Length: 124
Image (tube, rainbow, N blue to C red; front, side, top):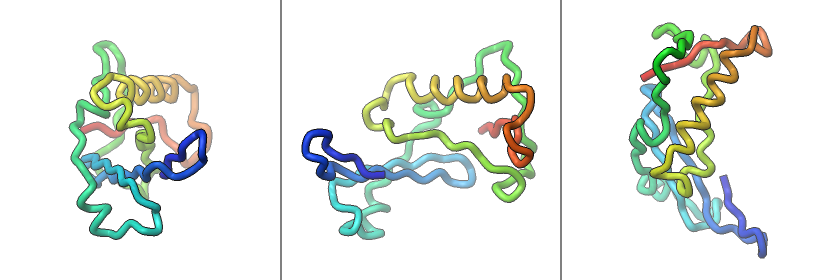
């Protein structure tokens, strides 16, 4: 994702992230044009993000339906956290709170918006 300067509309930096199949998150930011970024640039810029920095703890008394361990991306789509603001919000509770709020809202809906979506949560 590219971040543009609001005054000049010029590129400031490129933000990217990768979530492994185990749910580990890696985040990167590079101050180059996307077309000038090499694979080596991407891989060297990735930094591991701790679970606490992104994934919320579910408060006591809140029950979420947990997705079965054998489900994968072919069984059901996985809702991933939006991380465009990670650098600015790093070290705050903003992202975990937003993820939890979205999940609680999603879970409170009486039925999934489409038949291919589920109301289950993946957990680490």
